[in-house]
Image (cartoon, rainbow over all chains, first blue to last red; front, side):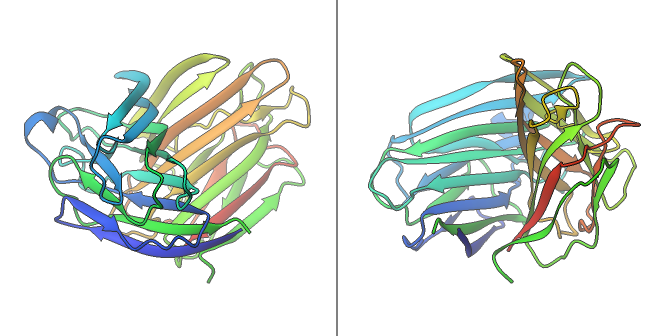
Length: 184
Length: 175
């Protein structure tokens, strides 16, 4: 197995950022990263995080799906676990971007793995991550972890990956690293 | 420097209360740590390890896990600044189990060299024994400190217990 760092993506003051021109010469892709957004008003102000969306090849049609288990809260103040699924969605949506109600130095930890990204079948990916906040937010302490999978019902090779905040902009410190993995 | 490198690895020849990884190079972007291990803690449930960074034993950590244990789902955790180490993994095989069983845990620590942001990690772990005790966990962990991580201590399951002999581990850097 050979692992090659393909690109580093940073995002500050923008609502989305993309890896583009991804070579099809590897077997799998892996992404590690961290995110935080500046959103502080509106419907999101009861929770200290935003939804982060992921699209492939800039496709915004309703051909994505995602399913993840989640755990949130603390033993002292109450915990919740459950399962969230979306089908026929316009993107893969995951709650992995702390917002302005989180401490500004708290970022998420994100991992994605996309096997056979250049093949001719429907694309699948593992997506998982977590973040933690102190008591500073309107939503109170709200550590959150997810472990799940997503997909793109398209047989095209993945050549670009876009990360976007559903509200607000990413702030400085948000970054994603893309790796190509060759199995031989 | 390769884009993925094993920084340190080992197999315990005897039980240890702590595995210390010191002088971690600051030349990578992200860290990944994995351990296959047994713990000497006596319990009906899988044993545990946890992480401490840069020898900081202050109440600067937190974490929350989701889990499925023997068919029962749940969640447990502590807010930031509530723990003196990252939250327990709870997937180490027990000394009382068959000796060929180990529990596996993997941690991802993004941007560990940052001096601007607190450190966040994500972990997954699993273990199963021959008596239908099986556990899958995923969770968060955080260290409320903006210092670069230069040392990781993997701590014993609980006071007076050990990470047992033949437990193995590796720490890798992602460029």
